[in-house]
Length: 200
Image 1 (cartoon, helix red, strand yellow):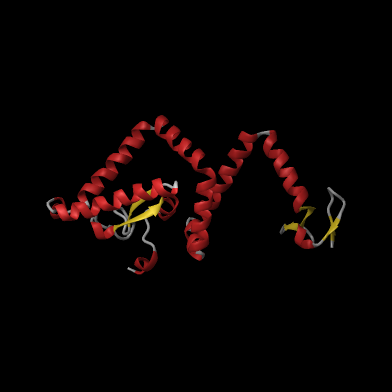
Image 2: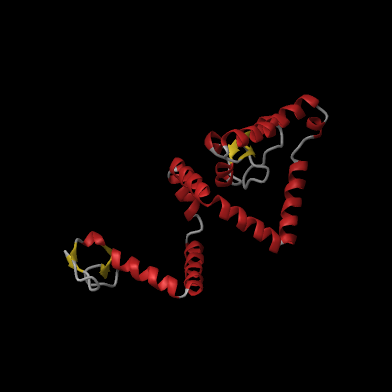
C-alpha cells in the first residue's frame, strides 16, 4: 500500500504510475490525482500544453518510427474497430478539418489530387478503356459504393485491393483490383495491402 501525497488516501501500488527515479518505483501522487492535475494544467494554457505534447510525440515517433504500424498489426481487428469507432464519433470534425486544410493549402491539395489522377491514369491499361465490358464492371463498384452509402447512411469508398502507390507493390486500376469498403476501413488501410496479400 502507498499513501497519495495529494488526497492522503492509502491505495494499492497499482493505483500509482511507475517512476524510475522514485525510491519505490512509483509516483507520490495516485493516478486519479495525477489525472486531475494534468487536466487542470492543460486547461490553464491549452496552446502551451498542445505544443508540449506535439514536441513529445515527434520525439517519441523519431525514436519509434514503426510504433503505429506495429500496434496496428499486433491486433488488426481491434485496430480496425477502434478506427471505425473513432471515425463515427469524429466524422463531422474530421470533414471540417479536411475542408479547412484544403482551403488553407489549396496548392498542396491540388498537387495531391493531380498526382493521384496521373497515377490512376498510368495504372489503367489501354485495353481496359477499349473494353466496354471492363468499363461496365468498374462502374459497378462505384455504383455499389453509392448504393451502400445511401442504404446504410455510412460513407463507402471504392478501394484498390493492391494500392496504386504502395511502398513495395503497385496495383492496377482494373475491375479485379477493386472492392467496396466503408470510409473508415479505407482510411485506416491507407496505401497498404491487407489480408492474404500481405505475404506477397
